[in-house]
Structure formats: structure tokens, C-alpha cells
Length: 184
View (cartoon, rainbow, N blue to C red):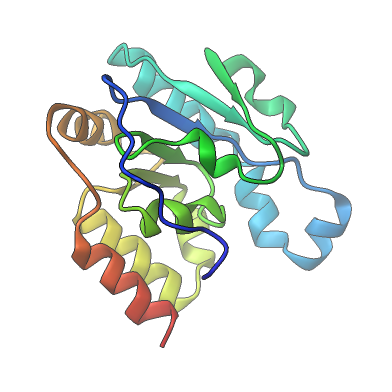
């Protein structure tokens, strides 16, 4: 991965929770990546995140996809961040927290590269369709409180509370595991 560079230490006084939205998928995407599109269209992932945020009164931003905004997020948006198609990573700070409802987002590489906390939510059906390496990655993230199924009520909120209340960054063992699993 060479697309994303390390960012300088920049911290805001308060940590921001940023829900990274996925783009809308075309019919072509469905033909070449049907499982990815099923994940993108899974409304339960979005509902789970929204309910966890609402139940625990978390303030959050939605990063709207700069090229193909997805209308399915409209009812879940509170505050929005608008990025440009290139260099959207300039919107993030070291003490932000990212939430991904899609395991194929390229921004996960950016978060890993910069050891910025991120959380990933998927369905159990998504997990069943994963490759062996994807399953190992999800399970490893889950052991570290960074990935959840969309039916694990309260787990996302508990992890967010832990990350918000501490000086937390992605553990080095998570980034090392990722590199060893996917780059070897």
C-alpha cells in the first residue's frame, strides 16, 4: 500500500467520531463484485451504527463519499464532512475515530498506516462470504475490540467509550498482523 502517507501529529482538542460512508454501487459493480455490493447495500449495518450512536448519545460526523454519495445514508446523517475525491485523508486527525460499515473501504489502509482508531461493522452473512484471510483479519480485529457484527448490541458503544476516554491508538500488533497477513 503506497497510496496513503503518514500524517503529521495533528490533534484537535476533542476526538471526533467519523462514520465513513460507502459509495453507491453500479450494476457493473454488482456483476464483478457481487459480495461487496451486498455488503454496501446492507441497511442493517447502517441501522446498527445509528442505533448505537443514538442510544449512547454520541456526537458524530458522516464523511459523505465525494464522488458517488449514497442516498441510503440520508436518514442517518447528523453533521457531514465533505471531502474532495483526491486527498480526502487530509480531513482526518490523529485522534479521530473512524467507523466503517464496509470492510472494503480503502481508507482503512490510511487509518492503519497512521494508527488512527477505527471500528468495522459487518453482518454474519458478510463474514460467511469472506475469504480465509478476511475472516482471520476480522477475528483479530474483534479480539482487539475493533470489529463487530451488526447484531452485537452495545459492543460498538462500549468500544467507542474506551477509545474516547483513553489516549488510544491502533495497537502495533494490529498493524503488524495486517501486514503479515496480506502483504506476505
